[in-house]
Amino acid sequence: MTETLADEDQKLVVLARGALARAEARSGAAVRDGDGRTYAGAEVRTKTLTLSGLQVAVASAISSGATAFEAAVLVNGDADDPGLATLHELSPQAYTYVTDAAGRPQQRLGGADV
Image (tube, rainbow, N blue to C red; front, side, top):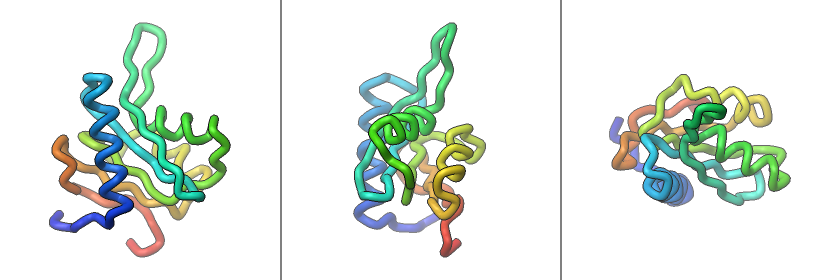
């Protein structure tokens, strides 16, 4: 995929890569809610809790009052991320970019113009 991301989506890539680096995780994610606010998260893996970065980002947004989503980015993630179900439960029209570890788009999922 050779698509160039819009500035707002590129910001999500930067946030997701930052979360990934801080947590020293394999993957990270960021979401933009319906009001344009952004949230990021990295995967969590402990004996008692396993969450994808997207699940963390979506949960952070919801716990901060978000009721809708515009977009998400999964850095070094994949198209079967369990957080996608929650994202689309609240906003079926939201789109997601899956990128490699460097933030280069590999796949676009969902969205009205796909």
